[in-house]
Image (cartoon, rainbow, N blue to C red):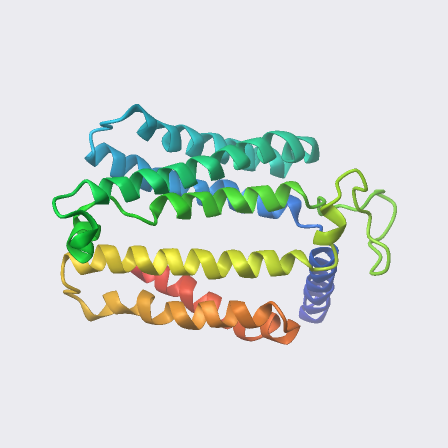
Length: 258
């Protein structure tokens, strides 16, 4: 196969992928993303609660759910039925658990000497306030994935059409997520997760007083990523130009930070 043929094949596959995404056919990929992101969140919550000696039994729930969401994400990538049942249920339970955990972390800061009268000191010394919500964001990805359609067509012998996508009429929200409309959901998730991640970076890096200048980069980059994600909601051109650029910068920055 010549380079020209390889290039044409690559372009063809890119167009096909773009069409599938526009039609809301991203279930398998997004399920896998949700499952893998829960691994990172699960490892972090396991370590943070280990430092707290698992003083309350409820501290075990995000650890268990992190593992469950990973399994559910992989299962959703394999099976459309499991995505609409197992992944959806685990995602909903994890979101609820994340909100409850956020309440417990607020209470933990309140119980520090001085409570909220010493906000900076007690936020830094207390539990990471945004961590439970970041965990819930991973679950929300799984929830969105459960309402999408798998990447393959309705029939193995039918090519993907850009006109009439196959949507699950039994689920009312699914047509609303088709034709790229769920792009808005992902843009909102990006805004929320970026804000929470930036806050947690500030929380972590403030502890050592920003010893290295590079520790400012995730905080400085966050407004640009949030702004481009906000622009992607009403403007499709922003979703195809600015958002991929700022997202790639954030990925590179995260890799360097790691």
